[in-house]
Length: 611
Image (cartoon, rainbow, N blue to C red; front, side, top):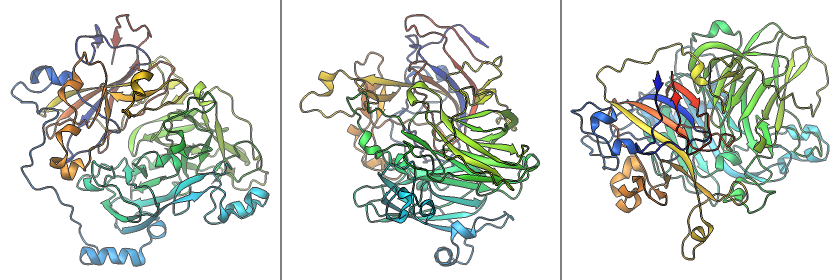
């Protein structure tokens, strides 16, 4: 279908073209009445505010709820109930703590009989190459493998650990298992929460883990218990949802397997130790990069990448042990790749000497198997791939390499070792060529089907069809990413303290969605919405097209239950700038179309097409 022109969000101006990656998504809102899920940043549909219901996509007889109206609670807040496995709930949880160590007892072949899996996640400040590593940094390699030794990239620095591991220990369960996780905040000076990334949490929305949206933060010295059921199989992960704690180590894999898998004919092995957790790492704690420096030599990009918490020394001062994955020639292995990065540097994951077959994304969203050379991973992306061990017995390397100029071409390696190989490991293999071959999840791409080397998510074909719309409400939601660039005299005006970031010298900005920078409310929206003062919510003037300065406020959007939402996402940034991953808690998308505007001229009228 050809569109004659691309109108602006407010309906009167043309979109300012730049990188302007256009993503069209369809989301089915069926999470339950009274249930909220957060965007990482705010969103509001200008067009819906300025149109009639019929123009906005609702049936003409439907009255659209005001975007800032306080929801009317007609029924009691939903409560979570559990079907006890060993009697009443208290007995079940006590038994779980006493006998079912989730890290051990729940990693198993799935037989259709769910278990209650208990985890104690001890969050504390910790040190890279600390006392647990003994003489690791002085040439005793065996000390680097001691329990509780974190090597990372070899730079001495503070971090935040879970159970003194990097990344946080993997949680691996079967579909239907009940996860009981006690998060112990042993940090003396910071609150925290844990978000279970990719879980829809239907019926367990209070455990989604977003401070001031679904819960209060976990204060220093206190413990919070999360309880929910793993209702969907797939590749997920968990991470802090406070500040940039994820960047300092508070993130780990969360894998849910099922008794059966419709794609199991493609592989012979799905092993617990074949999870590849990609992390970015800096030589000083993440909080020290905020708000940024007026210095060309200190920018907000990683110093290293890590694979399962390990990697080459950042300046080659000494050798560190690399992560290792073992395979047997002639077998086909399912590898689960998790983008646990925090900074916006896309990473190309490649298996030396091997192509892989990509089969699913972001949990268990399956698509027609696709053979690729590189898998491009952004923050929170997850891809499952099949590797056939069809090469000569030996050692090969798994590469995680940034390929955008502003990310400095950083790369990291892990070892892919064939059983029977006695070859020595090169502790610092050279980088691969810049030719990525056939790329899955290509970025800054036109997503044209004619370019066979760049496969966008919209080019994939899911194995299941989207549900019919039927008589459900239908709404459009336009979401525009952008940055507000401060005037220094305004930013540093005496008596004002405006939030800003300085990712590179001289560029002091705050991020926006639809011209609004999100600010958390003083109490959780899900449980104490009526206690949020009106002054904390965005006023109507924040959405007027002629506003001179963007707002910073609590922004939210009301949608009727069972609404089909057509989300159109624009990135107003430079074509060669940072990519901006997008995540909506509690939902999966049907991706309809993706593309890029061809021009960077903000004054030129653009024509765009979508299919």
